[in-house]
Length: 144
Image (cartoon, rainbow, N blue to C red; front, side, top):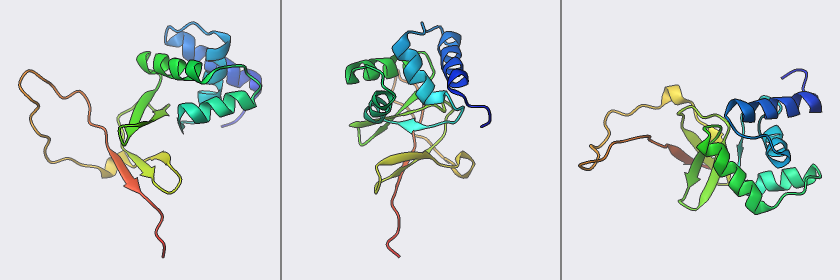
């Protein structure tokens, strides 16, 4: 990505929030700038984002980071990807796509969606509908 100055990154974060109808508070803008300021997609945890924002000199609590990530998800800016039912990752790419979960480094990366196929999905229980299918493929480096 070209022309990534702190001012451009902050403007990109502010615009991202206002376009989604969220008030661009100082803390939200700081988090949004870290998430999408360079225009690249990323997968983060609340804890890693908290460390990054603190490294930038922002005064923000971990609880605020969690609450802000939830608000971003509710506004459609992020998608939450659950791994093992206990660990949440947040993805700036909100399109439906599969993920690789790297067991060695505990990181998440996009998997090629065009290589994934389903021949069948089970019928949902009576009175329910399928809203989304999350695919997390666990991988680790081979010990060749």
